[in-house]
Image (cartoon, rainbow, N blue to C red; front, side):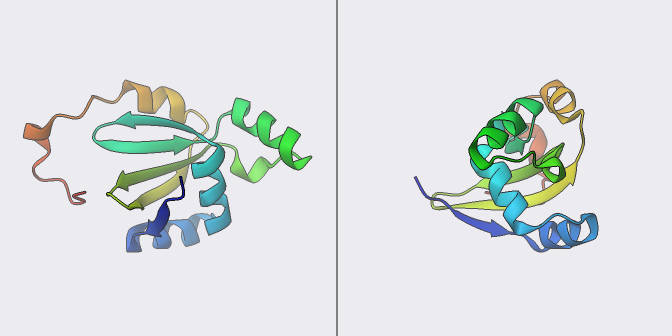
Length: 111
């Protein structure tokens, strides 16, 4: 299934400041692990994902190590809210609370 991937203004700004290209974001979404927490879908590159990519592309893609892409899904598109790098992202994301609609009325990005 092919989703249309859109970047928010914030995501474009953060990606350019952090040296993350759109191709790296696409690779993370296509080949990274995903986890649904706090009403958002997180994609992140683990060592396991990087080893799979090494088998596919023949080289170790060290620039993808620790890449996290926070997205919000619509019916026909995937909105990238922000991107950052954190090697311990999996632990941090798993500790986040599950989505609770009542407490998230003030959220800036609605999907």
